[in-house]
Length: 325
Image 1: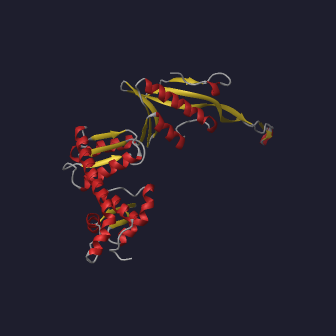
Image 2: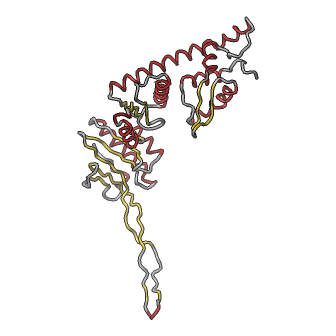
Image 3: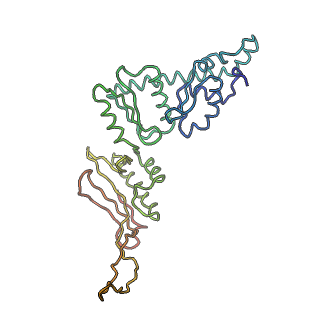
């Protein structure tokens, strides 16, 4: 195939995505990489791993193709060339409209950051919203929209809350950004998002597998009650651990859902064993912690030892009792 042969529909779509700054390094972008390599062989993009991350960038030839509908190396042959341009005309218009929208999003992003003191916090956005912000961030960087002396950084690329920050290194901005980055981690707000994450990774729930469905019911009920009262439940997964909490009048209250355990003696050999000098040894009992099937909810102010707890009581309570509002 010649470098200047017309692109197929998928290749043209991938070229438009790369030109718009769409990040194809995640698992959703894997399906486009074969087309990206075909575009690279034609000199329309650069594609491959760089510093451990897969990246793709449009070249001048790629921009020419999007603007004119053909490769810049294509020989001129009059009427036939014009006929080949027509199938790509609608896609070119779509690409130009998308680039225009990305430019508007990039300018709005910088304006929102300036108005918000340099920090923008979007609670648990969907994948389409995340992708739009990533394109806006990339376009703001490439088109020099970031204020001089500052840098544009963000966290929450694929999961959790999205935090975008205008960092000013001259005024301690890097320190503030590191604080935001390390404390934000993956943060999930809203009962639905928290339940989805806990189903995916139930490790924050200190319960047995058999009691896990009811623990999720407790979290769901708690989230609904807090929402009706005007508060929000938050699940923060950070380097130093995972915390489920609610903030009330500026005070954070940590919530822990656990299953009680009890110390049970393990069966062991109770025969008396003879030791030297006619002394005898009775084996020491060995204990283990076993799940009891009793659920417990603890509420404690962050950083304080005091706590209030709610727990199952009586036989059969695990299956019948739910936390009230």
